[in-house]
Structure formats: structure tokens, C-alpha cells
Image (cartoon, rainbow over all chains, first blue to last red; front, side, top):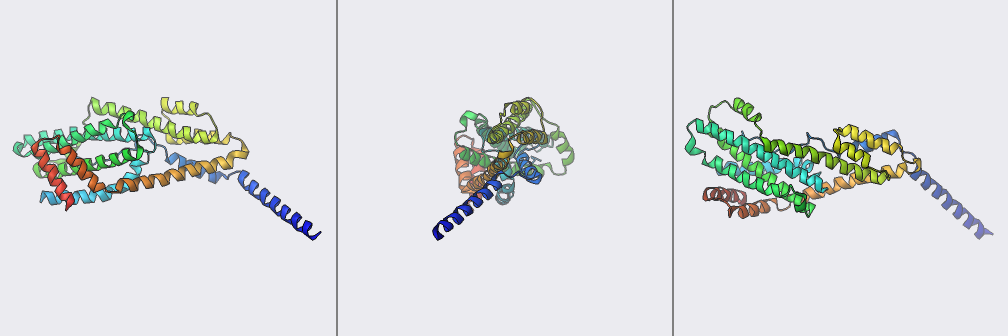
Length: 58
Length: 270
């Protein structure tokens, strides 16, 4: 009886942990997280002003 | 004295340009980004050669014609570097991105050294000449070659951005072609591209948003780490490589340039 109880508690714990992990994975990112990520993404893009410089001849 | 100045310039340049190099090579994880940097370098070299020719004309007008040989030699060296740079403006010649990035950094640093050397000698020969006026004159110079190169830069920037967007939208499992075409055929700014990609993100299923965002962040972080590793590789044995390349070039140039290159090798070795 005691063994069954222990196994039940363990299974319950595993189930709770699984739910928690699942919730973390699917929780919607905040606006700040989204904005920060896409700002970083924007920084990986280029425009024509992104020139290289080898100095002035005079 | 000039050799000492050159040696000091070379050492200073190698330290100062390092911070800028990370910005230069960050595009070189993609073949389009690598070609872009070489086309930009080719354009810069074309412009500097054009400017240098005007400076030599000005000095010749000051009756210093006998002293312009060194400046002409430097321009010839820049022309040789430009020929080498041109090879890498064809994607077919870009086999290994790391080696290509190392080559780019070396050729750019050599160009900077030569341009600094040219400037130092030209300032001596120009004496009291009005440099502000001369700079204004040469600043307006361009030709068909530099215009064509600038147009190619514009196209490559668009192609590079389209490639970045394709990689990001692939993570979202979204068809990228509509946005990629809008980038290539239009004039979207970086902010506008970001908005379009963000809109695509907002439309994906709620349940996959967190994982998708995480993957995008991981992609960006991984690229940052790769850029830093690549920068380290470009710094390794830089001096040895520059000397080896200068020696290789020595076989193709006339005696006066050979002597100048040999002097530079001596300066670097000290």
C-alpha cells in the first residue's frame, strides 16, 4: 500500500513538472521580448550607408 | 625616416581597424555578403586611384614632377590590389567563406597602409597648397566605373537582406518569396523589412510563437559568436600573411615598386 502511494506521488510530481515545462514552452512571449528580438534582427540587415572605409588619399 | 613613419602607421592601422573589421566581416557568413564587401572594396579602390591621379596632377603643376615617382608606385600597387579584389567579386571564386574573409581583411589593410603612405608623401610635396580646396575638388570626382560599382553594391545589399529574411521566415515556416521580392525589386528600408517580418511572426500560430522567437534569438546569438570567431581567425598571423602576399606580388611589378615593397616588409619585420 505504502509502495503504491509512493509511486502515485512520484507520478503526480512528474505530471506536474511536465505541465509546468509545457506551459513555459508555449507561453506567449511578451511585447518587449518580441520587440527586442526583431530589433536585433533589424541590426543584422544592411543599408547602402553600411560602407567600408579605407581612408582618404589626401 | 619615411620607413619609420610607415612602420608606425602599419602598427597603428592594424590596431585601429580591428574594431571596424567585425562590422565588415559580419556579412561574410553568406556568399552574397562576401561578394558585397569585395565590390565595396573595389569601388573604394577605384575612387582612391582616381583621387590619387588628381593629386599627382596637382603636384606636377607645382613643378615637383621629379618627386612623384613614389606616389605613382603607390597607385600602381593599389591597382594590383584592385585586380586581386576583382577576382572575389565573382561568386564563382568564393569557395571557402572563412578564407575569403581573411583575404578581404588582408587586402583591405594593405590598401589602408598604402593610402596612408600616399597621403603622408603627398602632404610633404604639396607644402602650403590649400588642402581643403583640393579635398573638395576630388570629393566631386567619379566615373562610369565607380557609378557601375555603386549600382552593384545597391543590388547586393538588397540580395543580402532578402537572404537574411528567407532564413528567418524559414524558421517561422512562412513563404518568404513575397517579402524577398519586395526587398529586391523595391527600396524597403531596414525598419520596413523588420515590420514585414514582424507581421509574419504575428500571424503564426500562437502555440509555436515562443519556440519560434527562441530559435530566431538563437540564430542571431550564434551568428554573433561566429563573427567573433571569424574575426579571431583573420587576426591570426596577419603580419606573416601580409608579408607573404607582398612577396608574391613582388614578382609582377617593376623595380621601383619592388624596392618599396621590400622596405615595407623590412619595416613590418622589425
